[in-house]
Structure formats: C-alpha cells, structure tokens
Length: 287
Ligand SMILES: *[C@@H]1O[C@H](CO)[C@@H](O)[C@H](O)[C@H]1NC(C)=O
Ligand SMILES: *[C@@H]1O[C@H](CO)[C@@H](O)[C@H](O)[C@H]1NC(C)=O
Ligand SMILES: *[C@@H]1O[C@H](CO)[C@@H](O)[C@H](O)[C@H]1NC(C)=O
Ligand SMILES: *[C@@H]1O[C@H](CO)[C@@H](O)[C@H](O)[C@H]1NC(C)=O
Ligand SMILES: *[C@@H]1O[C@H](CO)[C@@H](O)[C@H](O)[C@H]1NC(C)=O
Image 1 (cartoon, rainbow, N blue to C red):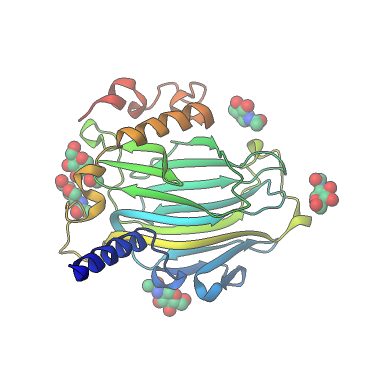
Image 2: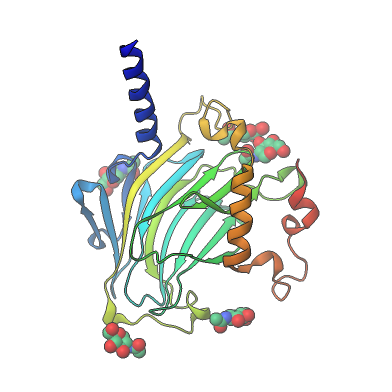
C-alpha cells in the first residue's frame, strides 16, 4: 500500500517535471550564425544572444520536425530597444517555405513591447498580427510556445493562446506541411520594426541582449520516415488538442479584445480582397 502511494506520487512528480522540462541549450539546438555574439550561461542551461554594430546572431534546432510543441523562455533586451528585433520561430528553408513567427519589436524606453506573429504557408505570408504584451517582457523570463498539429497552430504566451491558425486546407487555404526547424535570433530591424521604421537603433545602448532558457521541443522528427507526424500517438496530435478548451477560448478572446493592435484580416488599405481565411464564415466553420 505504502509502496503504491509512493510510486503514485513519484509518478505525478515526474509528470509535472516533464511538462515543465527545461533542456540544456545544446541538447536540441546549435548556433547557426554570429558565434561571437552567443554566450552560454549557467552550464548551458541559459544562453544570451546579443546585437552590436557588427552583428546579430542566431540558433537553430539540429533537427527538423513535422509537427509538435515548441517552447522557449525569453527575456528581452531591457535598454531602449527601438529597431531591435528578437525572434523565436519555425522555418522550413525550402523554396516555397513554411514559417511560424514570434517577432518581438523593440521600442523606445517606456513604450510597450509589441509582439508580432505571422504564418507562411507554401511561400505565402502577409498574415501579420500584433499584440501589446500585458507585462514587461524585459524584467523576467516568459514562455512563448507554438503548438503545431494537423488541426491547428496555436501561439501561446505564458500558456495563454494569443493566435489560432486553423487547417482549412480543404478550402484551398495554405497550411504549413513542410518539416521545419525551430530557431531564435536577434538582429537589426530598424528599417521597419519600430513605428514603421521611423525609430532607429540608438547604438550607444549596444550591445542589446536577449536571454533564452528552456529549449524544450517535443516534436515529430522529420528524418524518421517511418513515423507519421499526424499520428495521434504523439500527444500534441491527441483529440483534446484539436481545438481550444472553453477556458482557453475565453482567455483567447479576452486578450485579443484588449491587447490586439493590428490584424491583417482587418487591413482593407492593404488588401483589396481580404484573404479567404479571414472570412467570418470560414473562420467559424467547424470542419
Ligand atoms: C552543430 O554545430 C556543430 C558545430 O558547428 C556541427 O559540427 C554540427 O554538425 C552541428 N550539428 C547539426 C545537427 O547541425
Ligand atoms: C489538414 O487537414 C486535412 C483535412 O481537411 C488533412 O487531410 C491534412 O493532412 C491536414 N494538413 C496537415 C498539414 O496536417
Ligand atoms: C504605420 O503605417 C501605417 C500604414 O501606413 C499607419 O496606418 C500607421 O498609423 C503607422 N504607424 C505608426 C506608428 O506610424
Ligand atoms: C541614446 O542613448 C543614450 C544613452 O542612454 C542617451 O543619452 C541619448 O540621449 C540617446 N539618444 C537618442 C537620440 O535618443
Ligand atoms: C499528414 O497526413 C496527410 C494526409 O492526411 C499527408 O499528406 C501528410 O504527408 C501527413 N503529414 C505527415 C508529416 O506525415
């Protein structure tokens, strides 16, 4: 009896530890460019990526994945960061590429950080959304994550869904299908990132430093050809993750109504014909 109790609590503990699993940087990631601007901290459990006048830098997952859950804990550059772009994204590196982006657009000191997300499918993007973060992302680490299964793609901030992109490919709407690598970078985006590019980088505050932890990927590795990345044997493909729970739906609507500042679906200056996936009818169709 006692033994059962102990093993049960040990199991629960293990489950909890596993859910919040933080991996060392080099378990699944590699430096991809700007070596000199990448520094490993805390025995490789944390890294810092910096941007100076000479270079930015980036990391990428060693493997490509065909579906999965991708998590990163990030602390953004704390100084006046106008023009500095920090990213965490998935990318297929193919000629008609798929891509899922978190792009943090630096801002003048005291102004809110803006988080842009985008979805590319088969080389076509132009699906930007922007939200103002409801906390200061420069003082603490926060978790940013992407769930990608065959039913939808969900962008989360601290487990709050901020964006959902549904698979409506049967309607001819693009949906990422190609294996992607998980990546993170910091770079000079002053030509566009802050107030339409009018706010440039103040180099006297350089280097700009972003810190990363967690490095957690649970994905279907694309090089295992025998495995079907759509299989419900992978936990992120299981039926309960085919749509948001009622609680998630509630926080999703709430955060978007309060914090969303740009939605490509509503940009009639930019699009003469609003993209098909924006149609209300298409959006709320169950199938
Ligand atoms: C990771 O980077 C190291 C050093 O640059 C390189 O030798 C290795 O091949 C890379 N691994 C992968 C899977 O890209
Ligand atoms: C998208 O959904 C369709 C069914 O409507 C399915 O056949 C297809 O495999 C899904 N796409 C991906 C990438 O999972
Ligand atoms: C950026 O440009 C867009 C479109 O030209 C405009 O609607 C918006 O107000 C501009 N934003 C800023 C901060 O200047
Ligand atoms: C650039 O940053 C420095 C140091 O924080 C500050 O003294 C200076 O006023 C800033 N320049 C501009 C143009 O904002
Ligand atoms: C997912 O399933 C669809 C067919 O339903 C198939 O075309 C696609 O290759 C599958 N994706 C993966 C990664 O196995």
